Length: 473
Length: 72
Ligand SMILES: Cc1cc2nc3c(=O)[nH]c(=O)nc-3n(C[C@H](O)[C@H](O)[C@H](O)COP(=O)(O)OP(=O)(O)OC[C@H]3O[C@@H](n4cnc5c(N)ncnc54)[C@H](O)[C@@H]3O)c2cc1C
Ligand code: SF4
Image 1 (cartoon, each protein chain N blue to C red):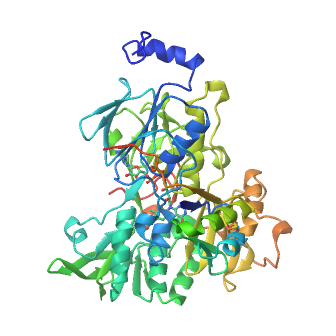
Image 2 (tube, rainbow over the protein chains, first blue to last red):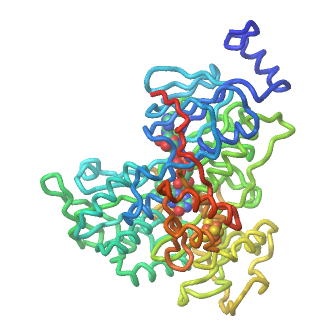
Image 3 (cartoon, chains in turn brown, green):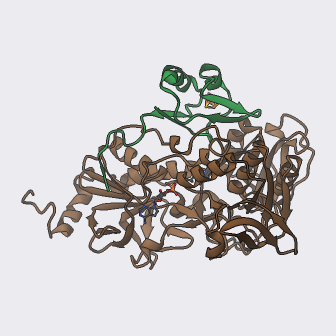
């Protein structure tokens, strides 16, 4: 190695010099080789990073796209193994796949790996995302016919089972994933029961108005939707699922159950790292730099994607944890930029949160943070037409909008959010009679849901108890 | 070849559906569905569709890792 201590002991000197010298060199390690990890790797090269780049991923597969898994794949139109992400460019990276990071030593600047190796880094990106929350009873979870849906392997197994024509599918949890699964099943002509502990589907992410709409929609499509019940037991015989029991005393026969209870953040490997990492994610600043457990920001450890929680100025610097495709991409790009830029050139991650879902033939899209609201108004369209825009406000300003088959309008509302426009919004965008009055947005306490909200305010609003995203397991 | 569509950007203009109907389709009025790994003979059509998308929502490329090397 070169004589100036490139791999050696005087790492501190090197780090000091690095600040002023060339941030485009050195060793970058990315843990988590999925959407955020891949896009960060590409952005690092776009930014001119010429040092060594290593991605560590627990899954054996190269990065793939998850949104199609609950849509095209469950409909049987696309095979799970055919959802690989396109490379935007060459990354000249070393990919360590099927390898789990088990620990982090920030002082020694090393990632500890499940295979016993240690991986030294100069800068680290944490992009370990989330996993499916498992069914709490491990014996029941092991029954043949019980599934979760997060990975491509999960989707492949579930799609195969749906193909075999089960008599009834039970979906536990009516968040976005659960609702999309139910939609795919109905489209395939399968009988579906959806069980949700909250008052309505999607209510955790979108509040009661959209929840009521989603409930009507599901029932109109033949879903046996049961709200305000919990599944108390999964029944089996000979190792195979045969049915389920509910808290209201009822029971059903089912040969497939999909557990869609939301996501768990993959932070266990950071437990002894001294970082501010826990069930709510890894806390970082708006520049994607991780906080340590004393709330002091690090300068060589960055976070992006589903595992991150970060303050957003548009939402009163609430710490947000977003389980959104678009956030993983945008945050990865900001993290990559900041990893190779001196302090004065760093950028904040300010993108307005946005996501989409398609279910029961409808295109549902959201901008802003619907749970950051006290009121909602249907500004355009109506539930009866199955096309509408619901606009959310908090203390008199617009904070979110959700469209159903009216996606073209969302840019307009994004602009209102970015400019903190007054709520309720004026008639500017309306193509028809709005007609409705604002009503309470009625976002429930996440503890009463079985699905998790995919947007979590992980701090708190001063006037409400929205302190935690979902029950800890 | 692989495709990913940023459906936050997509506004359902359906140019892609028109140019590569075997790969992109509208599901209902507005929801775009696509084949993430289109067959090789669709390549030219997909590239034309991606170029024509008014909001540049379609990302195309080779599967990640086709460049290798992988270490386990
Ligand atoms: C079925 C499904 C449908 C979805 N649909 C939509 C949608 O319609 N719209 C939308 O906006 N979003 C959707 N999403 C969400 C979107 O896919 C995620 O926001 C996105 O995948 C986040 O990317 P990520 O890279 O941050 O995390 P992940 O994709 O979760 O990737 C994290 C990776 O890190 C790996 N990892 C974890 N721990 C370790 C460790 N210790 N060592 C090494 N590797 C580790 C994991 O194995 C995983 O591969 C959907 C998600 C799912 C599951
Ligand atoms: S051309 Fe672009 S905007 Fe139009 S449907 Fe296709 S991806 Fe969406």
